[in-house]
Length: 164
Image (tube, rainbow, N blue to C red):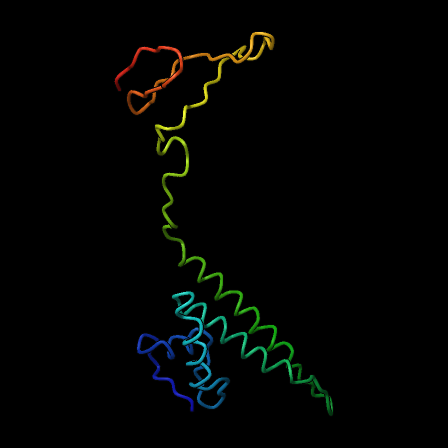
């Protein structure tokens, strides 16, 4: 079955037909059932009719791969050009999908040391010349202030607490 209302906002099927320009009743390229199959399979995954339309364009291009170019009486038909055009259309629709897909990504917090502080872990301290004299053993330079507030350093050197 084949249908097109002429209004791409009418349904997902009409929008996809519009995007791949399968709107001519005299030249039907793909059926409603085939588009519905692609909608069911891919719209939930990508959340966009542009990506589903790219899949439909690839399906139409695949139909043209079985056709062969032929020439008779000075007239030649090169169907592989149609296949290439629909492959290009599929790439263009994917690019349009990527343009619309520019949005907020996942929010990931609490991974970096500066995001959260674990009071059970003593922070590492570094200083200029810290390891210049290897015979002196482990050197601890600088204070141990938390930029977010006082920090209990446990067995480290006494450092005055600085409030933020």
